[in-house]
Image (cartoon, rainbow, N blue to C red; front, side, top):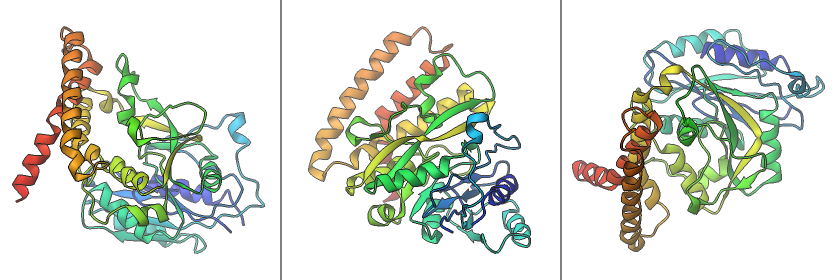
Amino acid sequence: MPKVLERLRIALGNVTSPSAFIALTDSAFCLATEASGKVSTNTAELTACDLATARLRQTAFDKGHSLQLDAQEQTLIPSQDKHFSWEVIVIDNNSNDNTAKVVQDYQSNWSKEYPLRYYFEPTQGIAFARRRAIKEAQGSLIGFLDDDNLPTPNWVYEAYCFGQLHPQSGAYGSQVHGEYESEPPEDFQRISCFLAIVERGQEPFRYDLRNGLLPVGAGLVIRKQAWIDCVPDRPFFKGVCTTSLLSKGEDLETLSYIIQGGWEIWHNPQMCIYHHIPHWRLEKRYLAKLLQGVGLSRYPIRMLRFRVWQKPLALLAYWVNDLRKLILHFIKYRKALKTNTVAACEMELLLSTLVSPFYYWQFFLGEK
């Protein structure tokens, strides 16, 4: 988090005169930071509203290394006759490190023009941290970035412009490129989207829930009014909490509510970020666990768009299709499942998807 705040301090020095609001907590024109190490779930979020038509140089960072700007990117640095007012909000999601002390130290030497605020959210899980951030944020647009996301200098500007051009957009996602600490496994692009790598072309397009594609949480911008209108106070998925990946699905849950509420969901390739992937997140053990969590979340996510009477038929259709995919995948890769990381992880995804209904029925019965 100190690195995030230092980058924000630098960014504040690059703009000079009112219109934007940016807040820092667990995701939002969000520079969501999630501290590593001892933290249970510590997040920081950056929200932005009413950004003036100037380009903000967003100094990219990633655990100590800065994104170098090429000649083209240098042209995106804002002119000094523009001004952005920022508010930084840090949401401490019941972490067990010294987040409060770090923020307090920064507050003592922070510009009064760009307030730095701290809030404690006792309920752990990124979904709860984001809800607290939405509640505290004053902006009309809220963007999400993790601390390992490196936005290009014009990210905020492009996000603002897109929101103005598409007033019916309840949310829109970024183009997310992978910056890998080690070489990804062969055919990694088949599962890269589960690590929030989204490269879906250079043309903006509107997502359709029926095709199963939606943006990822990294680099996502949400219109606050869409959230207020559509997203319930209590999430079904609490999101990543400590080291658990079994409650993933909070982003899809949120976006499903928003799109069902009549808002549009878009892909905006002009909002570009680089996602740093450490070597341990490319290991088979981690990837298999990640895809297991994704698979287990699919049943409740799928059922969100169906009425009660439709759900049994939808469940049967999905289950038969999932079984078909599992059998075909096994036939194709049965000799390579022990040596092919991507094929083994896809197998874990298919298996978890198949048992997803039973997993959640057992959960509900246990709750009763």
